[in-house]
Image (tube, protein in one colour):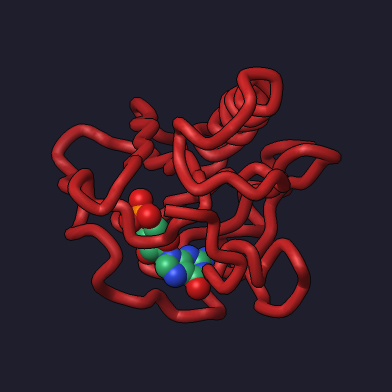
Length: 139
Ligand code: 5GP
């Protein structure tokens, strides 16, 4: 399947859709997931047009995983998490729903289960507050 520029992450990257951005550099952008599975659920996307893990140059992927590690540190600190789960779904059969490559960062705590994938939109004010917490943790 060819990369479809109408996907929502491409719109966010173009500025045609809004997001609660927590980090950006020349290669990557990170923002809050609009339907978080846990508080602090953050996504990291490459600026490069790549549909999934197999559609990106290794050098660009290296930039993306570096940014993911950097942002994950901030998310862990901001949410005082015991651990962090990194997830990446490539292909509809794997559960991918937005066809622009991304890593999920999910802060995890003992005894707190995560919600179903991409189901329940969070309150925008809450997402804004969570984004501010991550940005503060990264500074
Ligand atoms: P995937 O299923 O492709 O691995 O993950 C896509 C993620 O994007 C889901 O966790 C879903 O909640 C999130 N998502 C879907 N639409 C939007 C949106 O418009 N904005 C943001 N920030 N996240 C979105």
